[in-house]
Amino acid sequence: MKKLKHILLALGLTCLAPLAQATEAKIGVIDMRVIVSNSPQAKAAMEKLKSEFKAREEKIMAQEKSVKEKAEKLQRNSAVMSEAEKAKLEKEVMAGQRELQRLQNEYREDAAMRQQEEMKKVIDKVSAAIDEIAKKEKYDLIFVREAAPFASKQMDITDKVLKATAPNA
Image 1: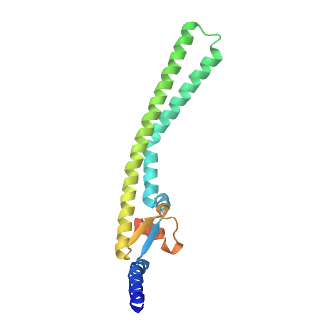
Image 2: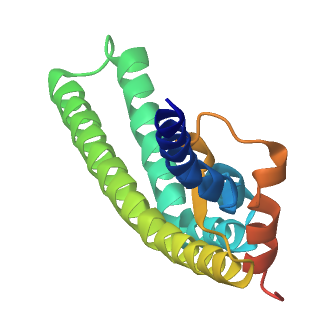
Image 3: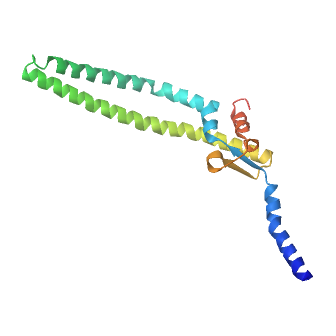
């Protein structure tokens, strides 16, 4: 009977050993949304994109205004226009709408592609900062907040990562 108790105790201790080691693991949690929205690089990238696409936005707005004015003119004056004038203006409105659609589609695709390029640079910088913090402070594991069902505030290292990605860090 004593032998059985010793065996059960030894078995229990061997099962608890990994748990004891796991509690000593240093774990951190980061909130990527906060990091990306508050990092100086992300803000600078968004400003860069805004200025880069400003001329195209203005061109689209001018095209929208032109199409709208022609459509209003057609609606307002169609009763007094000749069939030829009416057909010509209808054609212009349709061509303008197609051109506007093309400009908008190209703009959306190009803007999305450029945004992905700029955000990749930001994410790479953030990843490097996370690696640096993990090595320097000996973290065993760092989760993204969305992947962790629960994490205490003490485990949150988002501010450390933000500080490490700052230009003068």
